[in-house]
Image (cartoon, rainbow, N blue to C red; front, side, top):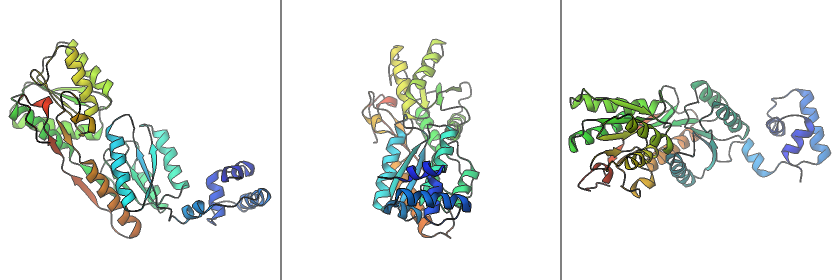
Length: 337
């Protein structure tokens, strides 16, 4: 069966150009339109119903750009968004950018070419011009998590400063920790900077001035292990670790155990994200919940509003995280989960 790709190849144009010509968008020269139509006639190509529905933006296809699938938080976030999307009758087009600008650019073009009716963006490598481009093409956008709030479009975020403050306050006030290491994500990454701000605020409030230690990872488990392992090898003495995510916290726990440090008796550890594994890991990980299900529901609800009310004003939502206390920070194994 002849496909749109076959037509594009024979006419020496992109599939997007063929699609626009088929649907009367007129974004091609008269010569190109004539050549494409000639090929279509010669090969007997007939557009399918899905292609037609895509051209009218009534396919209910929502694009979701995420930064990675290696961090367990993101597959769980995708599941939460997909669950919410299905309730509203939308299908999800998943785009894994692997934290690369080149892939983000590819997917931004793909979103336009596939006539998505809306886009959810979660990436450090998307800027305001990218969002503007999608909006100008009639694709409502909403940013979540890593994408910053300083743009004029809808956004759903989490108050990471408060999350960091809650975690470190718990370590100081409930566990009398005074030498707390902050295990950050990449240097300059926005959510890590927000969590660092909360870390510092809690230290300042509790008059801890003689110890501030920041080490960096890339949000993956191995980087957490390596950062804390290096710290231990260098002779740093600490009694707690606050990690910017759960994946690195798992690595930090392994590094401490390999060094003979007992958790939580000698070192207390708190993660961030409340991924499913955190409640099954040993010891069970104290962590900060971003409420993934709520993010999914709110994101789809807001995008549905933008799709069905094209002239409505964008909204920004900033959710409050919650500390989930488990074994890794509590000698008495008291839990609040």
